[in-house]
Length: 489
Ligand SMILES: NC(=O)c1ccc[n+]([C@@H]2O[C@H](COP(=O)([O-])OP(=O)(O)OC[C@H]3O[C@@H](n4cnc5c(N)ncnc54)[C@H](O)[C@@H]3O)[C@@H](O)[C@H]2O)c1
Ligand SMILES: CC(C)=CCC/C(C)=C/CC/C(C)=C/C=O
Image (cartoon, rainbow, N blue to C red; front, side):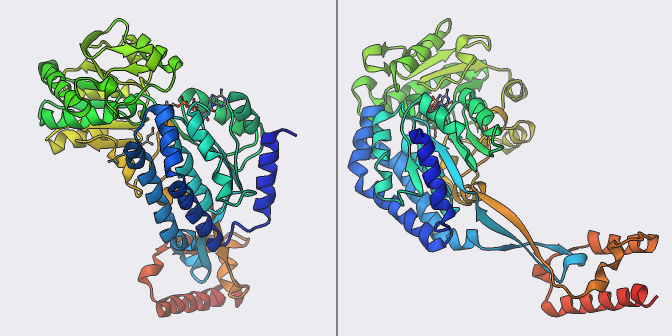
């Protein structure tokens, strides 16, 4: 039996004991997860520096804070999320208990990516634990140092219920041959398709947190200085290796020079004149990606940056101007510090440009006009839309985070993680009395019964607005009528 098979079997066995169901157990595991990130702060920071040249503070700010917030929220809201959820009823079921009962799915496979390895691997795990599942966690082998730290997780969590399997493509493929109750994958759309294919063999539902090109439209009617500050931050953070980084700028030709000028000033302000020796400027994860990104710049005109050093996987913050839609850099997600500017002739053309391509994970618009922002919202589709800023939607636990179409399927963060990794079971508990009310659904199906069925089924009842007494009165009246109509014949 392979190591992967063993891990899944043990996790399933642990799940079947039922011990992950009580909320106290889940809360304890979530607290232990928090203890892990607290006690391993230095190990995580060191690993992140080795993998991605991130400073300890950047790791705290962009990975740990969000994870901590998600854990705190899950701990404080778990009782509410896990409770039965009463629903509105129709008159036919007014006397019944009708509610949604969230229940654990079983064993969840979490496959993480390398760019924010802690955030994108452990935030889904928070949802899996909160929802009462067992989990097998597969950190990305590409961020190998951080993966090594995550191997220590079972020292903090129930080691039979939560497994960490490290390894590369063969190990992931072996995992994907196993049967899971949900697969939560973060990574590229190409591998996302393979994950979905493997999941389909077991009819396993998937969440796919993918990527793609996230456009950024700058309207001429906007404070270009402020817009460029926020775009520069969102683009060059983690050396452009952020799933929701603005991939390219769309703007009119008459503001292009100003945009370039303002971005140049911000690069200097944020990363100094020498980003290569500046601690808060990152590195490309490996030479394969370095070569891929450098090749994307071929055939386009350089406006800012362009320096690189393969031995250090360093690529300077770079802007390309007057980029054509057919250029290499516009054919795939850049996932690096290259920012192309594509010229469009106003909002309408920008919208058309966006709609002719895959639905993005994030769409950014900078404008002082509410009307322009509204038009962008109503005439396009994307996982998220942010106006006049970049990335910050990721920090709001009440916003579902996820893509649409090619950028992903499913969503998470906060209660969305809990729901995504739960089965929302429909429950209807009827009593064995009041049989008279049911006459209208039994044969023979007369026209008169159908008339009653229309009333009983189509009339929605909002229980919150009804008092107990009113309910009883309606039930009594209905029962009396039906008994009189059908049973006395
Ligand atoms: N939507 C999000 O939340 C989010 C977050 C981070 C990254 N991303 C996207 O991820 C992409 C970058 O990540 P990546 O794909 O380079 O990460 P990656 O190479 O680390 O792959 C992700 C995971 O898939 C596994 N994998 C890779 N190839 C495989 C194969 N052939 N078969 C089975 N498993 C395989 C890896 O082991 C890893 O655990 C970008 O497109 C980015 O936008 C999305
Ligand atoms: C701390 C603030 C203001 C914002 C954080 C935004 C951020 C780091 C987003 C990255 C989200 C993420 C894990 C993307 C995956 O590629």
